[in-house]
Length: 610
Ligand code: C2E
Ligand code: MG
Ligand code: MG
Image (cartoon, rainbow, N blue to C red):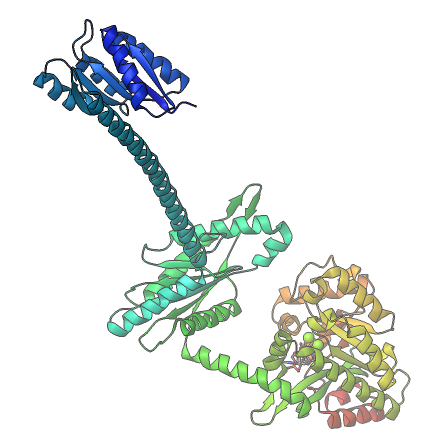
């Protein structure tokens, strides 16, 4: 393979031949020597060689020629083939030509005619070495440039990845809003600022969407996600540039209101956010409505860390939810104390069973037609070691939330069944007394419930037919298929089922015939108002009519006056329960009640005076 070419140009053939002779002696093998008699010929020679991929390392060119002069040729070659080294052969040492060639054609050397062969040899050798070196240098240079480019690209890629990672670590993937980490950091900075400048004020808002689960469950997560994004955008539009809104996951958002004038400003923003959510969201084929509950905690220099403020705002949010949906609440010390109390109750609850602090009270249920006692409802009470008596309304919801209702509910069931069995043995009568026991949703959903129910019946020797389990409307509609199965198992043990507080839950009555219900218990609130407003009377009438039409009987709860009783009788309510007959009684007094009721063979009037 050829290393490359040397091109000689001279209009005198003899010079060319002489050059070729000498060059072939001087050159290492591998070079081709090309001859041209004019500049024009040389240019086409260059083009041919170039086409064949042969590089011309060196050009030796005569200065004075017809046609293109040597300097012109060199300049042209410099233009087209800048790497070729150029030597000018001059007869007369024309200084101007040499300078021109140096300036415009990057002339390497010039050689006088006639030349000394040794001089020529040294010059050519040196020129070729220099050509090789500059070629190598150029290659290295290119390599370096490439490496540099690669490096820069890699640095840019890494920077990009780092920025993305840093962004991802601080933002929520769905809404692209900042996440909890970033917000917490910013709240911490705000706390610091308020320590330094007591006039600086800020607030933290905690937002929880109301009933968002319904959208997710009903329309699927895709629609749920779209709604979340749309809500995030709307909320963000209500804020100023220096406020920060973050998504806390699920349907929770939190906002830092930076540098506010006063507490009222935070409340105004909360109201603005609620108003912004009022208009419907149009998501493709769906038109959805959203509302939220907002808790507000105003920051102060007393605060030390962001977590405390978020906790306070969260607590206030729960309080807002408790007030009904779509409203806001401000954190207060009172709220804090309340939550501490709840926590205390929660931890005490677990010990209360072992310490035997629970007691069952029994409220008589009577037949409104014959005024006879037909049974009791078991109602649990907590005799707390230090707090004294605690009403079920104050601990049942906590027990339900924590799951403690499962062991507690079993205890109630066991105790009530045992008690009824004892009373039915002690007071044999034509129709045995019944015992109504309240069930919580978690109990009904507990897969071990039926097994435990069987164990209680077996251990207490009670016949299932005298036991009535009270459920609420919402329990029936949560997870319908599995509830239907559990209810069927309960019914197959001859146990009766009542719906408690009827009318306060889902007011759709159409679902009722699907469930194997024996009794509706009309909620106390209707009975309470039926004598004062006609609407409530009509509701009670409608419930009674509906129940009777599908073969279900009715218990009116909370009967306190004779007037109520008489109205209920005209509506053919079968049974009643309330202070008019008796408050819930401790077991001892309940037993006396049964005794007296039996002995007197009660008339209604006598019954009230027991
Ligand atoms: P509930 O099942 O609707 O029980 C009736 C409640 O109304 C009882 O309140 C009873 O004392 C009260 N009451 C009865 N008659 C009258 C009346 O004429 N006037 C007024 N003002 N009130 C009357 P209590 O015992 O405080 O129970 C409240 C709720 O706690 C119960 O409502 C029930 O939902 C729940 N609960 C009670 N014991 C248990 C239990 O063992 N397990 C479960 N899961 N819940 C229970
Ligand atoms: Mg009840
Ligand atoms: Mg009730």
